[in-house]
Length: 439
Image 1 (cartoon, rainbow, N blue to C red):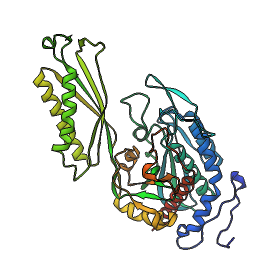
Image 2 (cartoon, rainbow, N blue to C red; image 1 turned 60 degrees about the horizontal axis):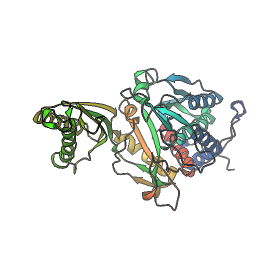
Image 3 (cartoon, rainbow, N blue to C red; image 1 turned 90 degrees about the horizontal axis):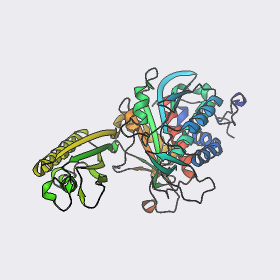
Image 4 (tube, one colour; image 1 turned 45 degrees about the vertical axis):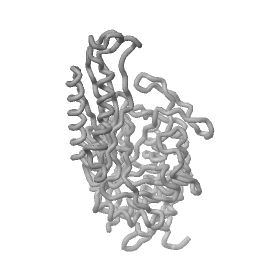
């Protein structure tokens, strides 16, 4: 081992030895030492990920996951705060030298998805989700996010005596949503409960394992990266009557269908989607109980995805006007309700420029690729709207496989290659150390 990798005594923390970083003007720039530090925690990162994967929990029910996290953080000598936003966990690592404050976030919750058999640590968990029995699976990779952040925390704690500044580790519940519709998602609830009140970082970082990239690749984008996610519901009220005599009533199903079709024309003919993408989708259309009764009400529920707040407001206004006009023409009424679950995730431009060299050191310049706009959403944006934020993708599809054809996140067939755990740990560790040690 070269003499620059001095090994600190870590027995008091119960940790395996991890390399110290080079004693030079910018210790974090030594990517070889960072890679070695990441590698030193990988066996535990893999074990944590498999444990969490086998025991997934839905949003606001991540009690076992939170306990595992808190126990590991205490082993690092940290004092975790628990119960934030029901099950969130936060801990602060203070370095021995003055420096900046940063936060790193991982989401903890699983999805109401039934996992196919195959993995030796496959989930067999079932639960109740909004009144329906469901299987539960880490089909989005949050198990990997938790394990990676625990690995980063372990590596940083091992270097505490050389570390400038402070790092807040944020383990967030309910990124996929709370158990009850209309309640705030986990990031907003953590902020509402003061997660940044006494510790306001100057930058916040997050990552997501992503099936659209191969292991070894990292995706980034300056400015808008992920879409805003609105959940909309449209209630159309007509007049119930016998199905054989529609002229005696007002058919809300027909009106709802007209509004739904018009909403697609709205996007295609009224919004400049060449300038910024917009997706308006209905996922539910519920009405009636019997074949020969025209009901008095129909309800549509869906999602709106946008990248520009002004465009979002414009589309909502147009949808409301379209619904009102079609309903009025038929003698019905229409009520549109919109709840924003997550604003657009926008990477701070200056922070992106500062972080990009770190990603290239960690993964190699050829493996760091600029991503296109992605219409999925992430409530990491709530943190990034409070302080400058940077969010990036870590490829999770096995090398040699066609990532474009891989089952995407949220599929029951989503398959994470565990090589992505090492890449994610190394990349986030490099980002954190470079930022803490300064440009």
